[in-house]
Amino acid sequence: MSKNAPKPIPEPAPKAIPDDVVARLEPVVKRVFSEGDFHRVDMRSIARDAGMSFTTIYRHFSDKERLLFWFIAYWLTELQQLALEALDSKGTAIERIRRYLLAHFSFYERNPEVGRIIFVTVPLERWMRDDTYRYREPTRRLHQVVEEGQQTDELRSDVKAEVIVDLTAAIFNRAFIVWEFKKRVYSLTGQNDVIRPLIESALLNPRPTSASRRPRRAG
Image (cartoon, rainbow, N blue to C red; front, side, top):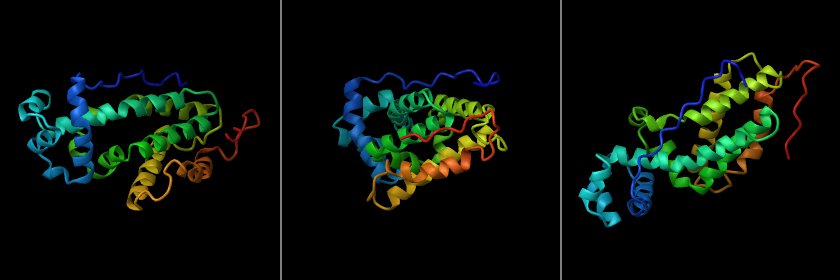
């Protein structure tokens, strides 16, 4: 781990909402925001579809943006845990990065509506104003793993760690959007095997020193 690595920043936990409210709202929020136009969604329609009063929803969420962003943070709690487990697992840097990507592929294949909301329908300009947009801890830990790989001469060091972190995000984001565009006719998780050689060729140091050990291929 880099000596200059930033200290962990706690993830903003979603504020406490009664379980029964979450259970009734969640399927409606997933459906209306993944299938429809964000700008046409309104709180009263959500309340009606969830069989709840508008006053009850408004008690917890002041507008539809707060409602949606709370649920995004709620859904991503699971992914953040899986991503951190992948990055903190044993193995070389490239192996852990591949597991990190696989965790994302697997999560969004199980939760395509969440992926559609995040990558397709939510207005990013609005979401970026909200604290839930920051994927703090997984990104920070991925940055550390990349730096570790660069310091051991496993990963290329002719580019900054931030560039490699951005590259991994771009690879997944594009893979999901194409999967969605093609109507999910193939396995999103299966794309991890397709992308694996590209990740290796892009990230591994092509000329490691004799003292460094080239990582073995993970099965």
